[in-house]
Image 1 (cartoon, rainbow, N blue to C red):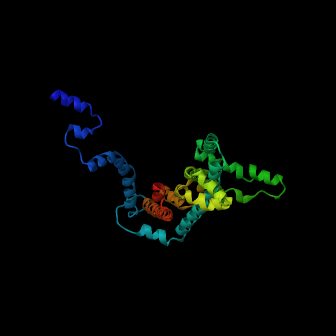
Image 2 (cartoon, rainbow, N blue to C red):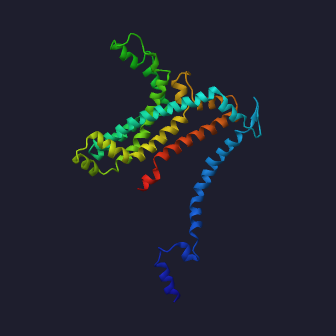
Image 3 (cartoon, rainbow, N blue to C red):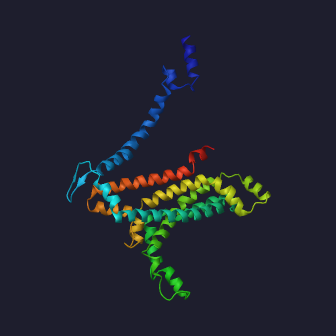
Length: 308
């Protein structure tokens, strides 16, 4: 009897370990145990530092040290300072322009790769080729724009050789133009990849049916491709937005000090050991970014699109 029971038990390896060892564990407890390692990492690496920044944002400070307190002066200074408000508006301007340009370029590139490149191998190869510049450091790629856009750079030399202008174009480098170009260069692939992923799921039979019904290419793109690519466009927009709002290096390098953003102001405060106002600025920036991302997800319900 005992031997038969042992054989029967060993013949059922698919039974849960908890059930074979004794009383089964509650499903909720098993789920919590599975999620515990990741939850601990998130608490230590994300939640705890964020809570610390929020706490410090209410502290007082002088040139030598910070003092534990509970005051709103750091936040009041942000919303009453005309310079700070301008920095936030400038950052939002950068984000809006970069979003608009990368959406257009990313959609066109994704549309070409998905519907005009017939072979899967060529499609994957071209997509990988677009990522080759990203094998190098962001810093190196940004610095490379300086000799290209400078007064004696490649672009100015080419324009002067055509005799269309008589002197170098000064707006190309150390300007908002250079900052936008650099942002578009570095962030467009973050828009392309999600849109390609969404377009790849579109049934080509829908495109063929639309053509058979007499729809033009413009109508197909407007009424079929764009609605079915909303998830990719949304996810790409979130990636581009968060990267643009949180950047410091590109604005600092390619504006030549003629422009600045919120993160630049926060970096300046950190260099001056003004930690409480820097923390307050970080909290406000985080709230603004979360609000913008929430607005984007409000327009397009990504969870519903993915579930569908």
